[in-house]
Image (cartoon, rainbow, N blue to C red):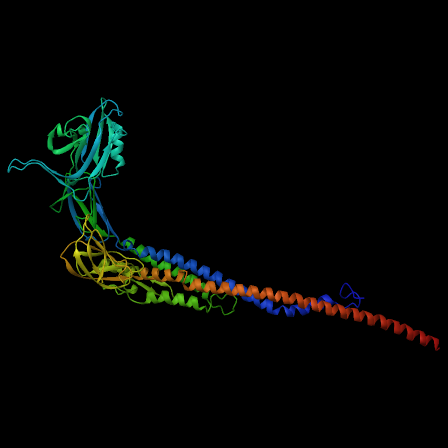
Length: 563
């Protein structure tokens, strides 16, 4: 009869024997688990590296913006009258600006209504925008109204659903055009006030009425809203002008300037003027280099790289004791990433400027592999080559034609020199037409953008004027921050080296899990076989022990009888 508990019959320690044998049998499973742990550690390390690269990219992406380096400050001696901002391309100089008149919007009024629910009339309103020129006596010149070609007329239908004073107001506002309407109570009557949303004489109003009462010019019905500045009062000029459209009038260094708005970006190159009030005397505007902002940007670049370098070194470091080596020690992916980043920083930038290496602005590698910044050398570069620093870091373009300027680019724009040809100049109402790199570009106003699938794709340039035909070239370059942003985008992409390696490791772990499952099934069978074998041995030994005891007793009995 077999024993139910191994070792009970013979005293043989079957459990210990089987455990010892199974420890040997589990060696392949232990190897699988060790490999799995190592691969999981690598995946975790890749996650840490990915996070470090993402943090670094956030920094370099911001530093690839021209505004980070084209840093200038503008000071005004009278901020109540005039302030200004710069795009970083203004001349370092002082300008005397005198503001004699602010631009204003035209306002027209119609009164005489006791209630806002009073009926005005029905018909159609047509609101046009343009410039009114008053009559001149000498030489005799009649008054005139020249339409603003940049603005389309607004047509508004007034019927029985909106023919009240408030209904007309709401209908005008619902048109969402460059005009608004409001109702003001002056204490006696309610007045409808129609206002041009845009300032300047070019945005004066002319309102034509098709009145359902068949008289489009009289002062009754909807024709009360008719306003032709060249007509006579009560006969087509039925609204009252409460504020005339005015241009901004100013002088810059003694040069008279006339603009339609109070925000002026095309008077002084690189500056946007904000007119706030008239000035009795000249306001001094001073443009200077903001060195601290530039130094801060360069310092941020150095710090961002050093943080990434620390992460890479911790992940790949070698420890002689073998106890604290990095998880990615000897890993080819980590080496590849380090190599790509250092390759960018080690090469010069083909930007066509006097500054094309980091060392020229005081940024250099140290023995420990980190970057260091020489503040004195950076200050010298800012003072002597301010306009060239941006091209060391950002994506920039240099045109041979002074009236063509770089605006922006995309991640698909390739560094290179591209020919520019213009066949039509653009403005607010007409798009520019031309080619970049010999391929038809997309025009939008005064700008041209490089065609899809061309090396110049995404390259956007502004054509300020000039002749038609060949307009020279523009050299587009990617600075260090822009290049690194592009490299890291590739590294972090779904097809990048980190994603590929992580996917491969996950596949390996999946295979190891399958292998471990198979080994566990085999180990269970082996253990069952061992236990069955040793149980039989235990039974056999127990039987032999019983036989041995019986024989011993018999021999003892025989010996006793023979005495």
